[in-house]
Length: 146
Image (cartoon, rainbow, N blue to C red; front, side, top):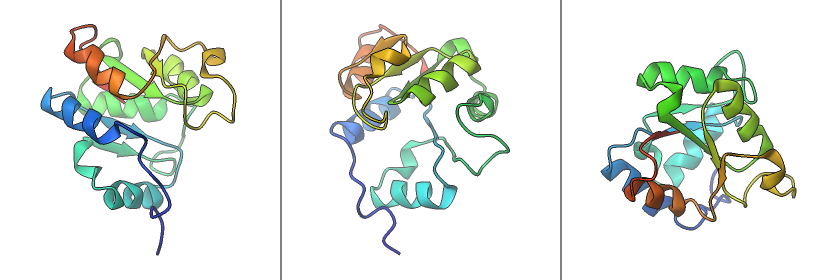
């Protein structure tokens, strides 16, 4: 099976995961992709161990933009929505976070069908994923990331 071999990590993803883990931030993946594919991609890139939870599109009865996957993570990790942060790259991510009552930051690249992420009105747009760890390190936000 070649699943995951064509995928590439965006710049700064590995360093950001390392920084968040070093800061003891709990991290979850919430995706609409199938569990089998998601796990394979995370394993191929050697990053599965950075995540406390992985909730895929076929893990629960509902998927994004329904808030259930995020609420499931919050409950399992014992993190209140007010202490969580959803970082995404699409209007579906923003809608999911809003429905779950979780603050949401977005990167301007990724899976948003060519539309500017600003149109989805996230709480903050960060230029790269590294900016999330930098903001947390600077004390701007002490949250857990989904």
